[in-house]
Amino acid sequence: MLFSLGKTLAALGLFALSTGALAADSAAAGQKQSVDELAKAVQNPIANLISVPFQNNTSFEFGPQEKTQNVLNIQPVVPVSVNENWNLITRTIVPVVSQPELLPGQDRENGLGNTLFTGFFSPAAASEWIWGVGPAIQLPTATDDQIAEDEWAAGPSAVLLTMQGQWVVGMLASNIWDIDADEEINFFTLQYFINYNFSRGWYLTSSPIMTANWKADDEWTIPVGGGFGRVFHIGKQPVNMQFQAFYNVEKPDDIGPDWSTRFQMQFMFPK
Picture 1 (cartoon, rainbow, N blue to C red):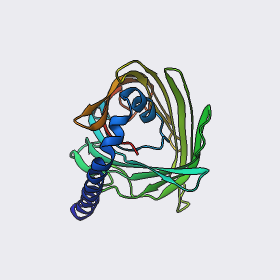
Picture 2 (tube, one colour):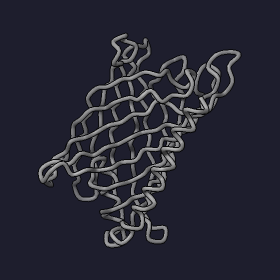
Picture 3 (cartoon, rainbow, N blue to C red):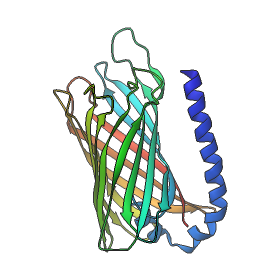
Picture 4 (spheres, rainbow, N blue to C red):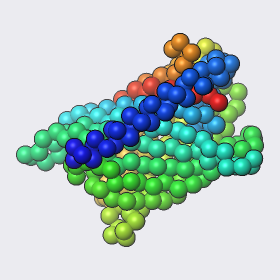
């Protein structure tokens, strides 16, 4: 486990060094764009904008022991121009998990969950409706079965949004199945996002993540809630920070948390 964790953290370290180099090149570009422009851009999951969000999710009264679970998602977003008509926006989510005991006799386990890679092919031309489609692929990087079982999985993903005045509204959905055909994974994710932007980079936001495990009896987890955020500069570096809180109106009886919080700090590297 330590060897696997060490390899993954080393890779993340190399990525951090590369994004540090990007910061030097993109600082001037970030200064040219106003914080209001950057706020709307960063709310678009398939914007032509490199960003590195660190999203910390804390779930309370999680599991049969009603303990606290914490998941830090490191999720770099990197757009690539395929040609003059199409962009490919890659989004990789690496979860660093602190998992409480689920059964008597277990201890809290800290490590990595399975990595989710998503690639959205999106038209390069601007339009009223922005959309993208592509594959979602789960990589078996979990360091312990208590956190997640090592399973390859894949399926389709799609995103659709529009920007009207101060509003940025849309949704992102995916469904993945296990690749080895043992039918253990059939997992659906739907995230809608509603943002209202004020001046000076401030905004209100609601972006809960609803999930359905089609292999479970109590398949749905449905949170409601929201929060606020702001885009600003630390020196020349554009940063997006936000806080949200959610209450689960529907959840699995044996493991689902009652409520959760999300704190995110996101570094942006405008081109």
